[in-house]
Amino acid sequence: MSGITLLLAQALIYFGVMAALFRLRHVMGLGAFLCALGVMHFLETYLAAVFFIELPFGLLSPGSTVLFSGKLAIILLFYIREDAETVRQPIYGLLIGNFLMVALVATLRLYGDPVSLPGYNPDLVLIDQMGALMVWGTTLLFIDSIAMILLYEKLRRLLPESIILRACLTLALILTFDQVFFFIGLHMVTGTPMGALFGGWVAKMGAAVTYSLLMALYLSLFERSVAEIAPQPLSDIFHKLTYRHKYEELLGKTGHDALTGALTRERFETLARVTLARGAAARRPVSLAILDVDHFKSINDRYGHIAGDEVLRRVVDCLRMEVRAEDHIFRYGGEEFVVLCENMPHETALAAAERMRVSVHGTLANEFAAAPTISIGVATFPDDAGDIRSLVAHADAHLYEAKRLGRDRVVGNIPGAEAAGAERG
Image 1 (cartoon, one colour):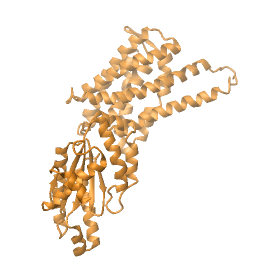
Image 2 (cartoon, rainbow, N blue to C red; image 1 turned 45 degrees about the vertical axis):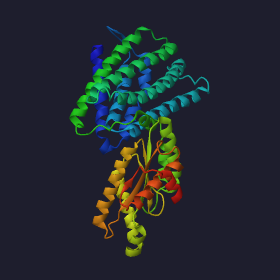
Image 3 (cartoon, rainbow, N blue to C red; image 1 turned 60 degrees about the horizontal axis):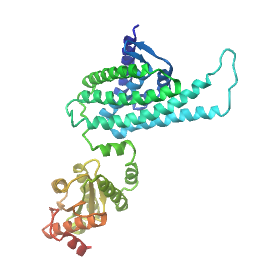
Image 4 (cartoon, rainbow, N blue to C red; image 1 turned 180 degrees about the vertical axis):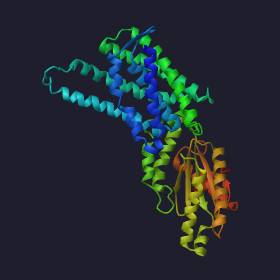
């Protein structure tokens, strides 16, 4: 079998099995797919270090050309059809698992030379070399994976309609980076000849094209109807890939209001400051809407507290239907709620608040005899205020003005808003 035919056969087998497991993720779960993705990294590194074939354009290793390039292609496919929060699982799993393997082998080496067995003597030099290459290769894999996803998203602006061309360019650039830096480590540890640098790069460019075509075939045959995830700011994707938003998320999960399911005021005090600090660092607006159920006391007095509680629950349900997935809803007081919207300009926040108002009025008018309505005040950082306390006061003043004007309305811009808020507080 010729070298090129061998490489193509390996690529088809690898991608075929991994794509099948990926396709079955909704039936079998992600466990089988993730285990298959991570189990071969030692073999990839070993083949990349010791097993080379020669083609007309130079030396190359199937471990690097087929297996490693294929792993990056599968991770990219995983991201294209899932999201950053899901794809980070194998990225970190590979990092931790491979470092654990190296650490355990290094611990065994503290024992000294193992007992010699008849007919077999372990190659300790190779073990030490493989440990060094595993550390270097795993570090590069982690960097490659993060950079690959960010580069793929960056190319959306240039190639918004072509997923596959984006994927091909992304793989080609990331594999070029990886080939240069992995070869540096390989040359230093094993003395691999320079001919393998160019030969391996040519082979990886072929792998980028091959795997991109296989991805196109898979997507067209099996997941054509699945929409690609909506574009997001690169900083948001980076935060998700690096778990930088996990602290806020965990706080939210442990701080929900028992009645409505909204986040508590205590969680607001923590999350709001973190969100404003992040907005200031990224120079992005943060909008805050305070809303109040109009004449809520009269609803309780006339229909009873059980009906009043149900009104509050349904108000939050309506809000959830109108906000973005990344927005936060808090129960700020008895019948008062706050919606915190990161990376949302003031005009967009006013439009979102109006949708909330219309949704609450339209839905609750059909469900409750009282036909509850809400009034909303909106303020935006940094234009309206530079800290969370002032931002709340500014939005609160707008809420006060909405009530003064007759309730069931949104207000986001009035003269002397700060003064009104201070007077109300």
